[in-house]
Amino acid sequence: MTGRRLATDSAGATIVEFAIVLPLFMILLMGIMDIGQMVYGKSVLTGAVHRAARASANETRSIALADASVLNAVSPILPGVKIESKRTSYFDFADIGRPEKWNDANGNSRCDNNEVYTDENRSGKWDEDIGKAGDEGSANDVVVYSVTARFDPVFKVPFMPARWTTRSLTATAVVKNQPFGNQTGYGSTAGSCP
Image (cartoon, rainbow, N blue to C red; front, side, top):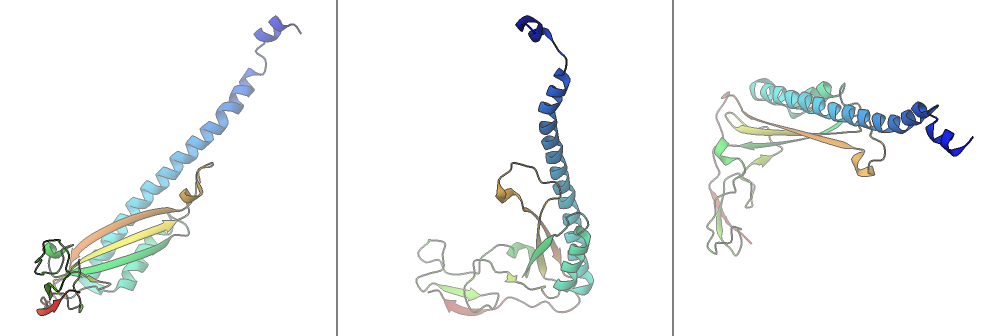
């Protein structure tokens, strides 16, 4: 076969093009399905966390029941999922993320050098966040319920770094407990920072 005839011969070109395009198409397709699973999983996780937080604020006040409810909702979408939850209770919405009150005499925004503080959450020490971690709160308390779901994706995209093999999704709900009793007020004990 001469060079000219070989250059114009197109027999078998389709199979070569297909062999080049197929791997790229498959990687693109798996990436789309991976992202789709994460988006759908995030949506289901967010809904489950909000439902569990509402039920907990209105009825059960049980961290274990709320976590089980979230796990049951996301397990079919995210096989092998493991969840970690965190609850922090506050007296009011305005308290979320605020530190306990203290006399910041040196103006460095830290409680130190024997500055006096008020132990509002009764922890026995000054806290940068007044919330009570791991607590479902009492009547009328505001509870921040946060869940992180870790899972191995069903559609793993090939040639990606090893650190991308595990996915993590987070959802948070903020609810106010029902007034089914008397709300515990702020503490008033004074202390001094180290």
